[in-house]
Picture 1: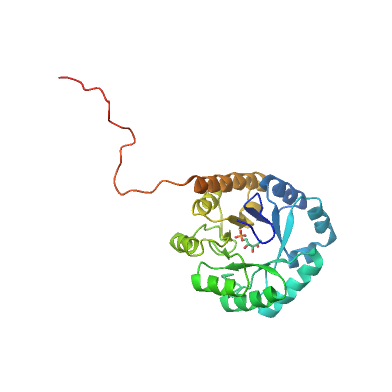
Picture 2: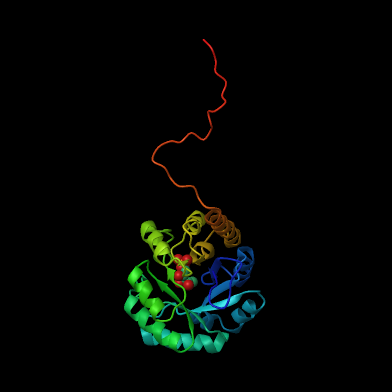
Length: 254
Ligand SMILES: CC(=O)[C@@H](O)[C@H](O)COP(=O)(O)O
């Protein structure tokens, strides 16, 4: 499905924070095959021009994010700075409620999404699997939703599979990207098998023993999950169903 003005060939979106070195970050981005990387304005501010130079060498689009923002005002101001700095209308909108859970503040998120959409931004909102919040975000002008798998940095995978499955069915024509909490390639594959359109993750790659190899592992798992969804998974059954036909089998006498 198209993400605003881009239909990425790769459904893998990668975060750029917390890598052992800029070189490893660069190699991980290449190994991931991603076309979209997300950059925190605070991180970019801290690293400065060298980081921007590194980004320019890569064939990727930048999705700036408002990581670390706790209020509507902070998020809107950060989005405006991002638009200036990266020359893009895209913004991954995070408005965090608590410093300890890092869960989104749904009320502030919807308000900030409305302000930014009205101002011409294309908002990628980091949200939960709650259907009502999803509807409010769409009403506010968002064209896609980014539900969490689990809290940021937790690596717990899909904590509410039933809720995410319901969300997929409810918003069947809206691009849905799982954002945050993915810890292993198998979890990302599962999300894609459920029909999600993409995965955004950071910590599982940045903090891996070998981030470059892990980026490649995620790329393959995400592709495999996507292919499985497109191919159509078999339905689960309560009882055994013989996979080998018995018609035509030889009969043995006594
Ligand atoms: C980089 C970024 O945008 C994070 O805020 C994002 O939510 C990723 O979360 P994980 O680090 O859990 O993958």
